[in-house]
Amino acid sequence: MSPRPSRLLLCLILALGSGVSCDKLKQKEAPPAAQTGAVPEIVDEPAAATPPPSPAPLDPTVPALTVNKSAQVSILGYHEFVKGKAGNQMQLNIDRFRGQMQALKDARVPVISMKDFLAWRRGEKDIPDPAVVITMDDGWKSVYTLALPVLKEFDYPFTVFLYKKFVNGGSKSMSTAEIKELMAAGGEIGSHSVSHPYKAKIDSMYRKSPEGGETFLRTEMKDSRQFFEDLFAVKVPTYAYPGGYHSEREQEIGKEAGYEAMFTVNPAKVTWDTPFAAIPRYIVIGTDLRDANFKRAISSRGTAEGDLVKQLLGGDGEPLVTTSPLPDAQIATRRPRIEVDVSKLEGIDPATIEMKIAGIGKVPAQYDPVAKKISWLVNETLRAGECQVFVNFKRKAETKPDLVSWHFSIDLLAHYLPDEPEKLEKATVVEEDVLNQADESAPAPPPAPGAQ
Image (cartoon, rainbow, N blue to C red; front, side):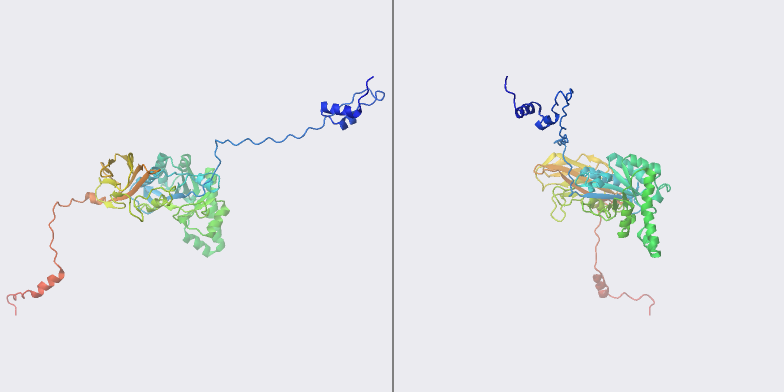
């Protein structure tokens, strides 16, 4: 009879085969047959907790969100639009408006929505640098009848700041249905108060009673937002101060009302650090034929990567190009020769030259490689009082194309004046002291007949 294996050896053999500890076997060892005929159940030890799944690896083809905190945004402000001559500063000829929209397109300046602008400021979305936001105040019907077709043509988003008492207010204001059409075409709405009170009105209410002034201002800012949110079933996160006036009291009540951004009329670019309660805008003045505020809005900020319009026309230094007509000049002819002298520049690729006229579009400009001049003789009568020209070309040594943009005006009255004669006789000019000397040296005239 072979020797019986020791208990220790048996435990080791069973443990290696089943993974059950010797102590466990000891607990579950079958009792003697005399005590019970049942076979004891061996219970497994509880399994270790399943570790959480590892996060899925990031898709290397999807770039991580980065927010350009050095970007600059120019916010344009408009009011009413007209077909003819502007009757006041807040009216703008619709052809000039279209020319400005064309200028943004030609200069490759991205126009972004208010929604994207706010998302950028919250750090939720990146935006192009530079960029432009288009806004319009009050709710004039001409925004619907004149400006909307232009904005649709260029596919530009925009925001209209409305004040409650002007909506459905008559023939000059937009109706609820027209505003809804604007919104369906990509427009957003913001609040512009209940009654459009200017600083004098607000100050007067505060002088009568600080409590009454506070109630008045809170009603103007809060009720207007609630009204438009209820009327159009959208969130209204923005407010434009009537007349641009604002102080700490307006800012605080605006924050109470829940506005995310409030806009002034101070002409400056918006940066990452611009306070939300005082965001500047460039208000376009309809009677300023030079479009000074619009030009400032899209002007260069002085860095190589941020230029909107390259400073070829000189600025404070010597110009690299010259134009005819000169910038801001007034001319009498309605069919001028428009010309850019680029003789100081080298390496211009003639195939890249392109000239556009606001309101006309691309024109067949010619390039003289000997004289190094880009020119076009206008072949149709210019009927507007101003002309905006854009000339693009590429130089071989430059990574980016150059843009020459300038403006000149036309004396419309001169078109109807008679032509000057071909030859004018030169007048003889006699100085006054010479005439006096002649009078003193001349002999006295003879006395009149019958004189004593």
